[in-house]
Image (cartoon, rainbow, N blue to C red; front, side, top):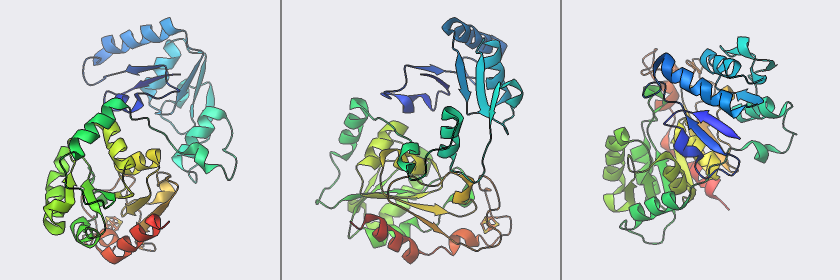
Length: 307
Ligand code: SF4
């Protein structure tokens, strides 16, 4: 199987046993404009693909497959690019997105009771193991298990505001590792201040996404907002406490790690208020997150880490 993807996502597919070639389409950079698009069309034509699975759903990717000469083009019936498809898979809102993708690729639902089949997988390799080893080599190690915290999100209302307080509760039990982008460093600083710098390793901005998956895979559990680390944890099977505020797991992007727990303010009438999560609460009270208390999340950590 060959995969066409963005420069940001391409490294995640390294070492994947089912992927032959990763074709990077940098539509905002070197492949910008009609010339870049045409280069890709020529590459698709030269490869003589017979089938294309268009999970991303844009008109551009549908057009690319069509004029690239791919005979069978399968995508979701709700996609912007569905005009270009030869087969349309029903986008079932009630399903997890991994189930929707399974259906898109296989043509039928996954058999009930085999949810492990839909769990995504990532394959960190030697490069990622070495990067993580270098990062943790100098961190204090008293033998306590590591626990990952992912306090960031690009969407303001998806950020649970009590990670530092939770870290203070968890630090007697775990060595804490903060994962995220470089922009999450101030959140990592707050956590280190609350829990004690000797109990916190700040990995923000220091690892690739695939190396972050490797690090998360070494942790006893992760506490994460509804953001990328949740999905990295699902892919490496790390027990997950997922915090949902303005969004809900029913959108289809909840955790798939074998042991997981959702922490949310169920029953709050304004939830969900947005498909992503607005930058600030449109009602001003931000109850979905500020009323999700530390004890509740702490108990969820204990439940997913219990043997
Ligand atoms: S409107 Fe409700 S769900 Fe949306 S951010 Fe505010 S409290 Fe959260």
